[in-house]
Length: 598
Ligand code: ADP
Image (cartoon, rainbow, N blue to C red):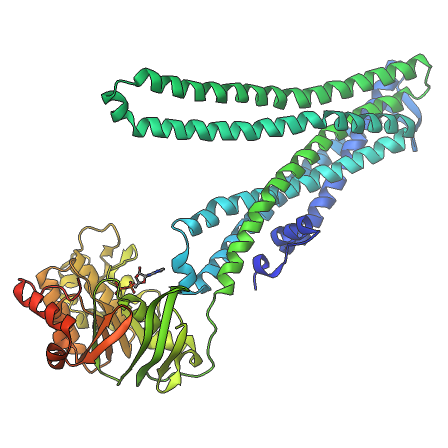
């Protein structure tokens, strides 16, 4: 089970759990990052302390340093101090490699894992779930939502780097001069608190701005849609006035958010400097003996302040990405909850097929199929006809096990079909949809369709589907690239490629949703020929949109209003079923076989 589904992030420690969803498998890398940040922070502390010491020594005009900086005892020449500072600087430069590489690796692997887990859940989801997804929803989830969540992983790594550096620098400052460091720390925290209302105001303004921008976008959209009316009714000035007001509203809010966004951090920084300079002036006026230590504290705290700001920013960013992780989890859970339960039985062949009182509804109170019962022997060719919306496609989806019936039993070889292993079932069942759907790849790959089939099987299928002559006439033969936008291939040829795809793995049951208008007469004849050739070789179900297709069928089901109203040979239906008779008459009156549904 994937992390997206496995970890329950509801309840009190939701933030921590969502972080586990994001970074659960990267704990080692996070520890390495914390370690690198700590060492880098120590090196930086050392550099700053040494610089303060060197400056103090130089100010006194000496070249030898002897004394304590807080708990640190220093006795060395300025040159030695420079050499150590230089070594620490080099060390810190080297550490920048893991500090840059680790976050990038973590984010890249988190992004890839989220995408794999999500698509893994989607591909296993039921057809019911897959087909009910809003258009573009999966793409949006897999791209922009995953990007936002990956942003959260990056913020988390930034939080670790800045957090550990902050703690190390503050710790060093406290070691160097407890009193001064504490005073400055407390002042900085108080200041941070004082500025919070300003941050909150900034957040509110940003929200108002995003709304104003949405209004502006909607207004512009409408103005562009109504440009013709605006012109005809001569109201261009009024329309301009409307857009002008929207522009003005966004302008004012944009200005205010910019001011607050810039003022807040610069006020914070300036106030920190004020506190530092003021504090130092007071200590100096009292004749403090530890001026080097004070200088070091100042440097350490200025840097710690920067890291503190980064911690704040990363935390804010991380919080903002958590809802996206939650949304990814929702999607993965929905997909996985819907995945089909597999049966235990082996299915060596498909013999008899029967429905017993099968009913189905998409919405609880609107039945689409009601009490359908029939039995079909292996090798029969069955036509399915009925008016549009009668439930034919739904019946086919149940036959293919894409949807389970709400009521009744679906038996194969007298055993409930769900008891068989789905893997066996999918090998023995094939389908040709009404709309041919090709992959942008060679015609051979389209027939093979991700299955392990050799060239011989592909060519045999092409022959059976009466498409081989066409393929061989193309310059690249089986290597010709076909696909949704490949215009060299006609609709009828695409349909025959799909028929070849369906036949390639020797199915024992073939379900065909016959194309209505896409077929040219030549292709129609070839598909008819192909179906006649397959007759009694396998069990055929054909939703027939042309009465001529029914010639190949042994028996025909008539579906009306979700009920199986007749199931007989075409001869008998002529006399016993009104719908069938009128559809045949209509077809006989038309020129090309006519339609078997209204
Ligand atoms: P046919 O293939 O005979 O035209 P369908 O099986 O496609 O009929 O549709 C039968 C009924 O079920 C229609 O009323 C249709 O609107 C409804 N229907 C089909 N698919 C869905 C779906 N995915 N969700 C809700 N209703 C559906």
